[in-house]
Image (tube, rainbow, N blue to C red; front, side):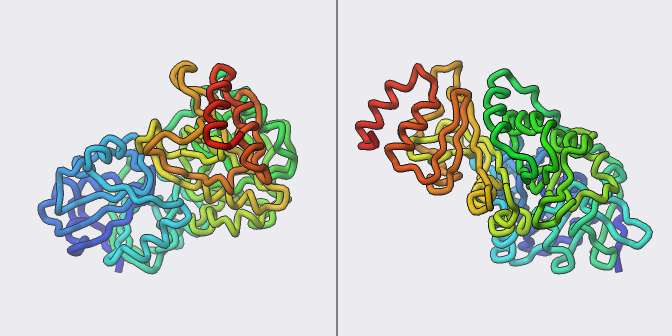
Length: 423
């Protein structure tokens, strides 16, 4: 029988010793329940919270509740980043598609705490903006829900019947909104080079960042696009509302917009609420390169911070220091690589720090982590052009990448390439 909790503090009694508390990413976090765990950590015994991309800060994230309550992140955010560097929380390297497998193998005593919409007349809650790594656990592990009046009701494999819910508590809390960044002229130039290479009938995945957002904004003149993406954002919603996205040429889930989580403005959340075109599916399906590859003309668009002359992309570190995580970049790059007519685009400005630092480098900065490996990288795009790397020899790669570097850095890159034996 599902228990209605008298308040968030009562969740403490539902958490066993050495529990692995699995929390959805972003707006899927049940903030009041995590607050309650944090405030009452002295009553817990060896509890670990597992989560990607947290949007809400809590003292325990900074190591203040050890060893009673600890945090394992699978993708750093602006909240967990300053906690990770001094050792307040841990980071697990992984691709987004692999998180469910890791949780099944290493979470010995799993329990899910998640935000949800109110139940419908049939007794089904919805995980709203999320399916991610939690949806696949429905019916298999205990669920404690924070039922939020402002969470949109969505469709897909993220609905949970009241009989599968251990307990719940009600809240009325606004969702976190993230405004899309206004693209700069440089962003638009890079985006134009990508958009002109995307054909009608393609299926789109766009990652986080100003340039992927700008690419999506330039697709308004296209026809019959499909969407199969980990992240649903404002730009994609605009394309769907404009009739550009129909999905009629998709191989998997035709006519449906497939995603595993959403993050944007209120427009996105209102669009999601009760919308039958949308399917929220578990990340182990959405981000599986084998599933992605079945879509014809799969177009993957993701950002990076640094690319070396072999084509290795360091997308989760900045200046050799951890910034985020692998996310789904490699998942979609590999899926697009095997798609019939698919293309993978990795985008970045050619320089940083006002032009003083080249983002095209001979070798990656020490401490950098390779997110998309050289054998998978397809198109690298800067404001100076497109380097096509699939099937290219090392010498050809080096020349192509130097050609899209900032002109002020090309001579130095050529010298370094010669020293490395690339030219």
